[in-house]
Length: 138
Image (cartoon, rainbow, N blue to C red; front, side, top):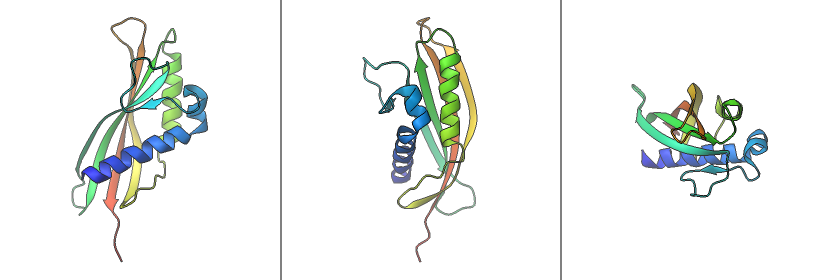
């Protein structure tokens, strides 16, 4: 299981990093982090929590719950919502290539935007559900 979860994270990272609309929002190269540096320039995107569970009834199939976070210091929610929209456009129903698995689908589940306790940072979260299945060996 751990190999496919890592392969999926890498594929999402590479796909988002190459997206020109996301580069327009987050710079070139796009500021996308697994663990942002303390001096990260705003706005930026982080790869958040990820869970995998058996896809019921399908041998070698997994359901993945993935969270992506946007951080902004723009005054208000506009920038975060705009970036979440670009992330949606880039990932919802995306065709990603994995080495030993097929991506059956990846779909947007929900998004949320809120102000963090520091009073100056806005955070958005987008949750996606992905389904993978082991490639059949012929």
